[in-house]
Length: 311
Image (cartoon, rainbow, N blue to C red; front, top):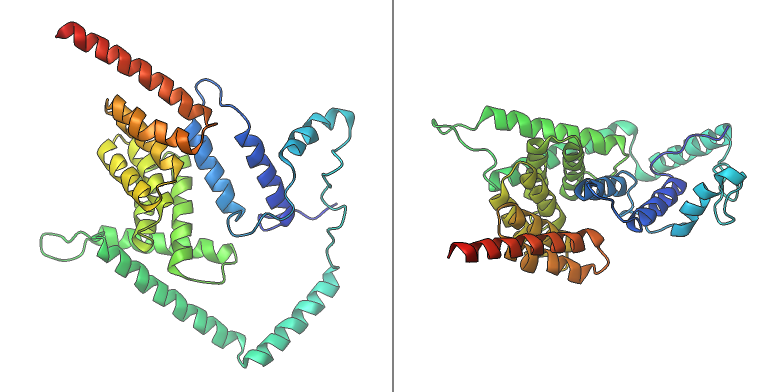
């Protein structure tokens, strides 16, 4: 029996990349939550670290469809190799352990340190990161003072919990660099999962923390805009989308979410002109955006017609 795959496996990344390519070719049906699909896409990219690793021999998009289409005939496409077969091989358990032990011993000698001192250095880096995290939150006025001037203990406790949850996730994923950048990315990932669970307020708070660490990240602000839209805070959603566009004028998703926020408050013209049309210019084949333009144009025409009747 082949050993189980994990999210760090090149084979796993090939499968996920193929699935995402397939997903891009599928036209959403009526009533499909396109926003939910986009969030799921981001979660997969983060879980399998697709942005960290370059495309390692990706499967052609059509092979994913062919693979499932051929199940009935008990054959796989020629360019798809099964797990446990082909050129991928694993060393035996005993050989791997001996090699790892030898490498560890050699590394300890060359670095001139033992495991105790290594753990101590790692602990110092965590403490430093904790200080950087709280300093970043303070700069954004995250800790709103109470009437007596003291810090809000609820906010302090929540921020501490967010930090430790993110740190634990970084350690479980094998992260070797405890930096503000990786901490922010982990907090964003947790915010995306909160969105999937419809915990929109928690998602906003996690995005707040990620943005405090990386203020000029267009994706973080755009994701927070999506969360604001879900709890009907459209002014905040518009503000985040506009900031996201300012950071990255070519970020199509920010224009699309800007259109949704404008549409929700009845600004149909701005939704179409400043949001959906801009998104379509960047992604001409996006059927969901085309549908939003069509619906928005119909609503705008109806609104203008009834307005004329009242005048």
